Image 1 (spheres, one colour):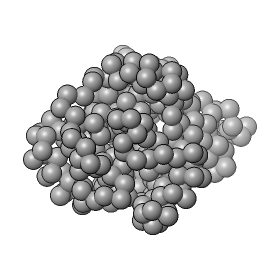
Image 2 (tube, one colour):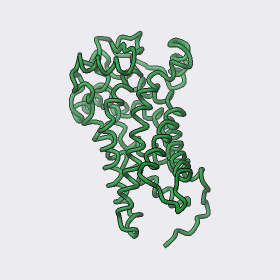
Image 3 (cartoon, one colour):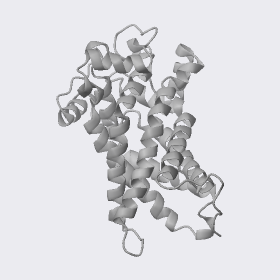
Amino acid sequence: MENKPSAFSLPEPALSLVSGGIAGALSRTAVSPIERVKVLQQVQGSTNSYQGVFGSVHQIWREEGYRGLYRGNGINCIRVFPYSAVQYASYQRMKRFLARPDGSLSTESRLVAGTVAGFLSVLVSYPMDLVKTRLSVQTAQLRNLKSRAPIEKPPGMWQSLVNIYRNEGGIPALYRGIMPTSWGVAPYTALNFTMYESMKELVPEQHRKNPAIALTLGAISGGVGQTIIYPMDVLRRRFQVATLGGGEMGFQYKSTVDALVQIVRKEGYKGLYKGLPANIWKICPSMAVQWMSYDLIRNLLQ
């Protein structure tokens, strides 16, 4: 049975923008503590002060209190809303552009649509992602990451953007690390969207709007996609904190290839997967919540 239009029905692309933005913010808030653990593990280099998912959560709680678990989540939601909104809206637009005359889509077309959506979403939100990572790291006890006293009171979101712009090289500094980020996000978005929609087509039509289906398929597509591109996510975080505190984090990379070589040489291949368990704990429930929320909100507003 088709849904009757609601009193607040929205046309495209507003429907995808609103549904995607809200779903993204809800999903990131649900897993914010695990996201912070993942980032701290990724940037701790050859030290291993943050070990294990639950041990790291307990350590953050002990050192920074309850608020420490959600440090950077406000800026993350501000970042994720346009990121997810643009991602879903551009994906829907590209699907219509690439569809066959009968409206169907090939797997290749879905992958192309997801890749374009991934690039565009990174482009519009990257400076906020940079600041979110900085805030997550700055409030940790950095002597545990690199021999250095903790920063007592980190700057806020706007001040962080201004400081990076003024002190680290202007506009280019706000996009430091965008290439490895794009190389990670674009294929991840392509895999995530393609896997989710392809698996959903295998579900009997009468069950496709069941929230449990969206939860399950979202967890699978998100987990598989993130595991495949995870080394690029590690590079993304390393580049983002490379100049933090005058470069005292110790990450001085000339290029993406140089970063890969240095990490493998100094930390082994395991260095490319630091924080992966925390990432799986984060991405599976996060994408489950995001896809379920997106489908529910979209059906409500359609």
